[in-house]
Length: 338
Image 1 (cartoon, rainbow, N blue to C red):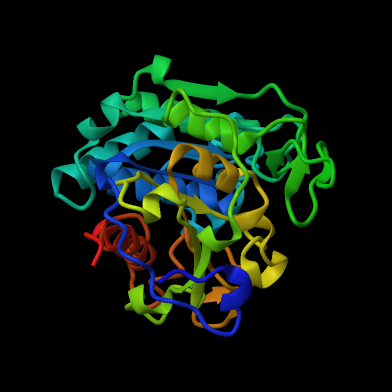
Image 2 (tube, helix red, strand yellow):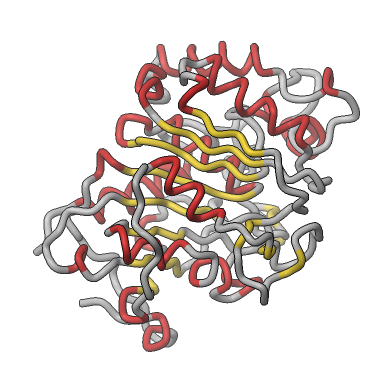
């Protein structure tokens, strides 16, 4: 049974089994959600066909410089380094990823070789600068993704935001809440077209296809900062017997439903494309936390807050608390319909 978000405010439902086509899964995100995108994508690449990274640095970025703490690297090296030389240490990160793959902590890197990747950096973005995002492309090239399979767009004078063609959104060049900007450009469309070429034009979304579900059942750690409720868009065809791919969408800091309601999961353009192209959209949610873990802005973990008691925090492998929870959500969607 599916309930629309409007009718589910007082009652969430169990994430349904939809018989999804799990080996055509993909993922995208903005800012901390972009870092999380790389983590989910690389760790579970055996089920992935592509990724969309908007204003995010390379996988393992916070481990760039051993002389800094993970948090210092995350908030300087991985966002706005003083010089290119103090930015992400991509050769080291690629070697570290290869070691993780060798020991089975992430999927084999060879899985990435036939995938398609979209990367974006706005020229007015001063939060995660182009110097950092450049290294995202270099990382994927270093681990075997052909340059021809990477679309890197640095052509738009956009602030730190996800971009739309909706003139009711924030002006393109600004950086301010809700970090969704009108740049006369459908970034959701660009991402999905890169990953799944030949998309049909957006269709009218259906309110009864957007559901609020119990995210808590997938969480097995008290330190994830993940919200009790998350959202999914399950198109008509995917509820009626068709096996559909899943696209995971990660919001950025201060963009979860706690901060901006439904603006990211309902108004960024993904759902209209999902309805037209039979794609299931999965919108996991993080909420702010003032202590244990300390995550006041509701960011996804790319520096280790979800492993607060460990001398070697794990936020980037297949066993990382947030990644483990999201993989279980994807697996649920892929289960046969009952």
